[in-house]
Each structure stands twice: as structure tokens, then as C-alpha cells.
Image (cartoon, rainbow, N blue to C red; front, side, top):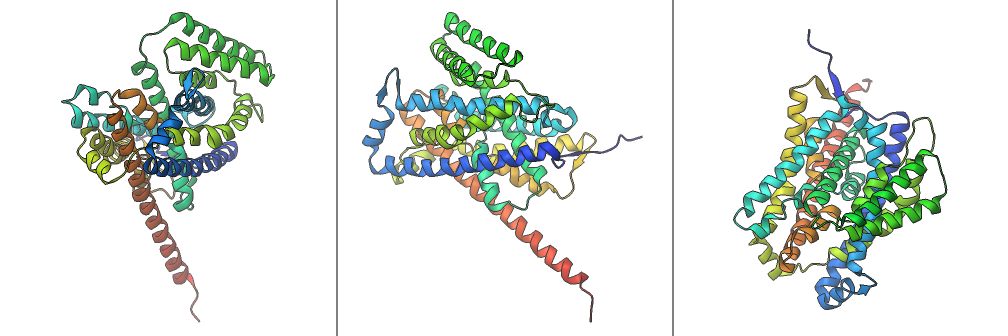
Length: 407
């Protein structure tokens, strides 16, 4: 006898639904702020590139303004990602293997195929090949902002699918940053960071609630990680994963920390990072050079084609060869549109651009490609979803008119 069908992308209910709505609101708000900061950075850089570089290279203590944004403020973004990952692993969608299988496989396929496409463009250039991880990342804030604008009538379960995709994507990017973009390691400093993480875990286990103690531990763990040679954002992820969560508590530490830090991450950290990173020339000469660059072409193809095809095929093949089916109201074209939105790569993609390339010209070409591909994915995916909503409304009106009693 064939095993019973198991629905995938099933609707979120109860506390899961409330949590999902909360996340959607905050990430959407962050997406709009990040978009505004990106526009300011682009205009500024193309009006006066010298003054823009003066700002980003301004030395503030041990780091430049750009480094404080990428290595410091962005740690808050990764801390929130760690908190979300912890919750999903313990009591969310990733805690149920049967439900998590499809989005996990889809996310993995959506990371491997873009990297392979990028390498096919850059296999002859060792310096260019180092950017293979750039098109792997999905920016959940931008993607959810597009959903908020054009996909308001989409099933909540499909939004949950996109959220799960982004969480798995973030985990993959975190692993890549930790392993690939770490040079020489100072083990003494790394040991200091690990010791701080142990203190954080112990405080969580003993249910110590003093926020200031944790703020000090967080700051010292970050500084030790910075000095160790490992990218300091990893400290944020690790501390998020070590935070305690409990289904029995209405507001457990994961929720309390997320509510406290999320406004700073979405409202300050990520927009400031966008302001410091997105300022690249986009004039006629710069765009012409970009279209001749294997790095730029590999990133654009990886984000637009690799993400869409990889995620859709990963989801479809998993559903095809397991006892899973789509939830009520969800169609495979909807999955395709969501996969296209996953090609919006911004925050982590821009960070990896800085980490992967030594040549400033290559960095600018890569960042310009990320912006172009993300804009295209947002426009194409948003148009697809808008047409889907319009068709649904038309079908609903036709069905309503057919059901009206004749006089």
C-alpha cells in the first residue's frame, strides 16, 4: 500500500502562525529601509565617488566605517539569524524532518546550482573563481518586502516556505564564511571567544536574565572572534544558537532577544551596511564593463537562473519521489515565482563580495551584478505574483457570477 500523502508547505497555525506574521512584518520593514539606504548609496557614489569613499574608508578606532558596518553592525543581523535558526530547529518547521525535507533540499539545490553556474563563467580565472559563493545567498528582507507589495493574497504556507529557504540559505552562507573566508587563526583569541560562548550557554542554562551581563559577553565574544581571524559575524550566529528556547514559555529567551535586537538589526545595522556597501558606479561605462565581466555575468546568471531552477527542481523532485504533495491553494507556478524571488541576493551576497575578491575593480563589478540581478529578480518575481493574484481575482469574480441565482 502506498504511504499516505504528506502535505508540504502546509499552513502555519497557532503560535507558529503568529510568529510568522511577526517575522514578516519586521523583515518587510527592514527591506524597505535597506532599499532606501541602497538608493542613497548609489546616488551618492555616482554623484561624488570620492566623498563616498572618504566616508567608507574613514578610520574609526581599529576599523574603518565600512568595516564597522560589515564586521560589527552586521553581527546583529547574524545574531537574529542564529535566533531564528535555533527556534526553527527546536520547535519550528526544521524540527519536523518530514516537513523540512522539501525546503531544505530546495535550498541546497538553490545554493549548489548558482555556484556551479558562476564557476562555469570563471573557470579560467583563479582570482575570479574565489567568488563562487556570492550568488548562493538569498536576502529574506528584500524578498519579503516584495511579497508584501504584490503577494498579499498568497497562502501563508508559501511565505513560510520562503522563510525556511532563507534560513537554510543563511546557514549555508554562515558555514561558507566560517570555513572558506577564514585565513590564519589565532587560537588563543578564538579560545577566548569560545569561552564567552560557554558563559552565554551557562547563563542561559541557569536562567540568568540580566541583559547587561549578556551584552558584555556578546561584546567580548565579538572582539575575540575579530582578533582570532575568523569573521566576527560568526560569533553572532553562535550566540544566537546557544540561546535557550522553550515551548512551555510564552516569551522564552529566544523571543525576548529577537524582539530586543530585531529593531536594531532591521532598522540600523542592515541599512547602514547597505549604505556602506552598495555605493558602486552604475554609469554607462560601468555597466558596459560589467556585461563584459565573467564575474558579473556569473553572478547574474547564478542568482536569476541558478536560484530559480535549483529551488524549483529541488522542491519538485523531492515531492515527486516522496509521499508529499502541495498544500491546498498552492500551485507549482507559485513555487516557481517564490524561487525567482530567492534570486534577490543582497546583504550576505555583498558581504561575500568584500571577502572573496582582492581587486577593487572586481569587487565593484560583483556588487553591481548583485544589485542588477536582485532588481531583476524582484521585478520578474513580483510581476509573476501580481499576474497570479490578478488571475485569481478574475476567477473568483467569474465563479461568483456563475453562482448568482437567475431572476
